[in-house]
Length: 419
Ligand SMILES: Cc1cc2nc3c(=O)[nH]c(=O)nc-3n(C[C@H](O)[C@H](O)[C@H](O)COP(=O)(O)OP(=O)(O)OC[C@H]3O[C@@H](n4cnc5c(N)ncnc54)[C@H](O)[C@@H]3O)c2cc1C
Image (cartoon, rainbow, N blue to C red; front, side):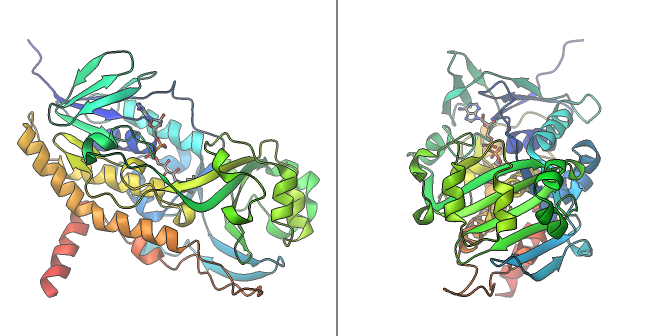
């Protein structure tokens, strides 16, 4: 029997957003191809936390047991230390059942591998997504529904999902001009250290912070801060040091990739006011990274013709709310929800109409969270004081109280009717 023509979906980028979109869009009669420029081993050694709004989608909506499969650690809460190393605030998280999911900490490679398995598994609805690695997209025609690869190949699709990250090459064909990621004025040191090394080499730190326990710990000075947490069942500990570029002793502009290296001596100078037992940990990092943080302003649109931008390509944001990847999950869930009732092959007008609904539903929320993420870089204390005024849960109810795109849309419609 001849096979009927499938609904062809191309996803550009096999990062967190692209894989999440593949999971959400899988359904009978659809053919999903993910085009990834790398050989797909590019996720770096660092942790990532998914917020309750994303955990609810991944675990409940899509049935991916990521805590087990990706060795996630359910976060029990925030512990806030001042720059003198004194615990000044705690924010418990486990009792927050109203969010419908947990805040979960993963090693990025584990989360990526878990999403890849779900996108390509034979045991889920529809055909497994096919991944084409070493396939760099260099051009896209949103109206024709074509993408061109560096190899010279051209592919055609009914729907194109551009999940090609903060430096998206497809963005300009959607927006009509180039939108470059802009420096936010902040950079991030990053390091991951095995907790058994910490126990041996940094015993005071280990006794005070118990790094294998499932907590997010922050140590906050006026403008520099540390955000720390475990992954891999408590066997590794991640530290991110957020520093204003002006305080950095190194050239921020030259630190443009996840793999750019930081200098231990310079970092110690920048963090000189932090407790000795904290700084003793930095020397244990085998790999000290430094990364200038960039984001983008809200775009005027995310869609054109058969194409939609999602994830960092659409709304790259600072990591201060831990919402970058979580917003990509929301984008993916929205695509799944709005294409749910499409059973045949949609024509261009159908695709345009559905993508416009996804954009209408997602834009205001994602843009606001971009703004909150910038807002959270404000100084954590008054100048010259060690009293911490920054609240890590300030935007949490808005960020995490999300129950899927269609529910969000009906809430927005109801709110508008009341105005
Ligand atoms: C220091 C730091 C800490 C963070 N911590 C968190 C956190 O705790 N929680 C959280 O939710 N978020 C966090 N984020 C943000 C999060 O990492 C991003 O929002 C998320 O990874 C975005 O996923 P993405 O798939 O959109 O983009 P990416 O992860 O950048 O993936 C894009 C993919 O597209 C591929 N690609 C790019 N161009 C092309 C092309 N032309 N052709 C084919 N393929 C292409 C790339 O190789 C890559 O695989 C953090 C970010 C930083 C910088």
